[in-house]
Image 1 (cartoon, helix red, strand yellow):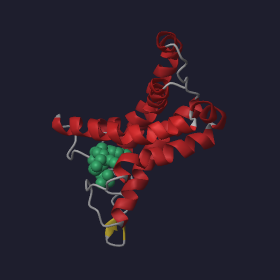
Image 2: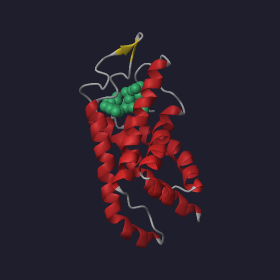
Image 3: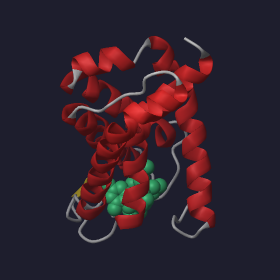
Length: 181
Ligand code: CTP
Ligand code: K
Ligand code: MG
């Protein structure tokens, strides 16, 4: 498989997992998931993980998966190779897994004494991949096997941190995010 094709498929297949975090930044606010509860002397998750942000992030990922599925045949014609159409379970694994990974990362950040917004290099950039890929493999096994070859997974692991850093710096400069990570 040509490198461009691998990158295009990796990017397309991961879009429903990339968008939820950014949508949550735009839609976040309101009641925190942990309801303000602490574990030891730290918050369980912190004020940065809200019900509204999580719900809107997941919905945004699902909506994008539906839109991509709608245009996939035409996109495939233009590109000269097929790109993924998302089954509902694949979409749920990618979008829901991304939000879950982000929440688990905040749990780990609080346990390691990091305040809300503190950076945790590596975890910040890959948390959603680490959960969304296994969850998708579990929920939509055949779909996952059809699209996520070893090469595609390798591209995802390299591409995701680059995209994550870029989008967060842009969101920070636009005043949408409090920190550039
Ligand atoms: N957000 C949300 N719900 C989520 C994820 C994010 O409401 N499940 C919103 C919050 O307003 C959050 C912002 O998006 O402050 C940025 O997300 P993120 O960087 O993940 O959160 P932080 O505030 O940095 O908190 P943490 O240290 O726990 O990551
Ligand atoms: K995060
Ligand atoms: Mg943050």
